[in-house]
Length: 424
Image 1 (tube, one colour):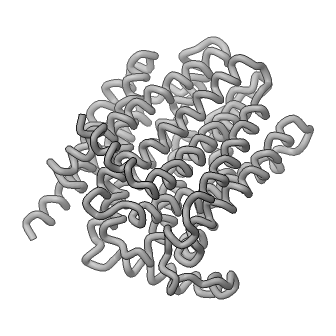
Image 2 (spheres, rainbow, N blue to C red):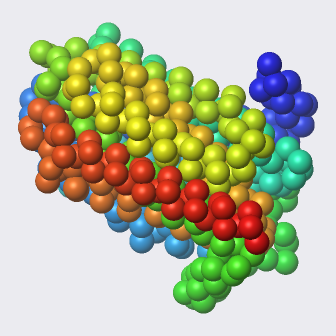
Image 3 (cartoon, rainbow, N blue to C red):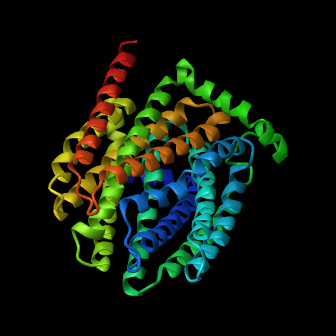
C-alpha cells in the first residue's frame, strides 16, 4: 500500500520519528485525560447530565482558552518549540495529577473545572507547536503525506488513550481519578521523549526568538495584527478559505458530539455502563474513519487539490449525515461516526497542509494558535446551539438537518472558490 510505503520513508527521518513520538504520547495522554473528564461529568451515576450542563462544561473548559490562544501563537513564534513540548508536558503532568486528587475530594465544581481548564490551556501550546514544527523535520515534497500521517497518528493515539481509559472505567467502578492519573503518566513520558530532540531544531529561527517574556507579551497585539494581515494577503487567501471552512465543519462536529453523548447516555442504552460502552465503540469507529482519511487523503489531494478535497468531504457529510443520523438507532449512528471521522479528518489534513505551505515560518505559531481558537469557539458555540435544540434524550431532527445544511453550504462555497482559483 502507498500509505505504508510513505510511512516507511518518513520513519527513516530520525527527527520526524522523534517529533512523532512526542505527538503520540502527548495526544494519547489527552485521550485518557479527556475521557476521564467526560465520564466524570456525563456518566457518573450520581449525575443526570442535560445538554445544557454538557454545553456549560465545554464552555468552562474551552472558551476561556480562547483568551490564551492568541498569546500562545505569539509565544510559539519566540520560544523554542522543543522547550514548549518539554515544559508544557511537565506542567500538564502536575496539573492532571491535581485534577485526579480533586475528583476524589469534596471540593466545589468550579475548582475542578479550573484545574481542567489549565490542562486544556497548556494543551493548546503543545498542539499548535507540533503543527508549526512539522515543516522543520519534513521537506516540502513530503509535507502532504506527513500531514496525513502525523496528525492522524496523533488522533489515533488519542483514541487509543481514550479506549484504554474506557476499559479502566468499565472494569473498575468509580475509577475516573485513576484514568486521569494514566493521562498524567503519559504526559510525563511525552516530556521525557522531547529531550531527544535538539533544542534548536524545531525553530523558530534564532533571529525571531524573544527571550524576555515581558517583551513578547508587550508586542502581542501588534504581532497578532501582523499575523492576520499575513493571512489576509492574496498569496494566503487559500489558507484563509480553508480555515473558514474547517471552522464551520468543526461547528457541525461539536453539535453532533453533544447529540451522540446524549443518545448514548439516555436514548440508546438503559444503564450508564452500557452508555459508556456504546460511546467507546462510537469513538473507536470514528478513529477508524481518521485512519482511512490518512490513507486516502494524499491521493485525494493529488486528484482534487486540497480545496477540492475539503469540498468533497463537506458534500459527503451533507448527504450521509442526515441519511445515517435521522433513524436515531445504534447501527446507523456508528456508521455516521465513521463517516464524520473520515470527512472531518480528511478536511483537516488538507487545511493543515494549506496553512503550512502558504504561511511563512515566522508566522506559523500564531496562525496555528488562531486556528485552534477558531476550532474551540466553533465547538463550544455548537454545543450551546445543541443545548437549545436537543430534547433530553438527544433525538432532534431539526438539529440534524441544520448541520447537513451547513455542510452543504461549505461544500458549495469551497467548490466555487476552487473553480475561481483554477481559472485565475
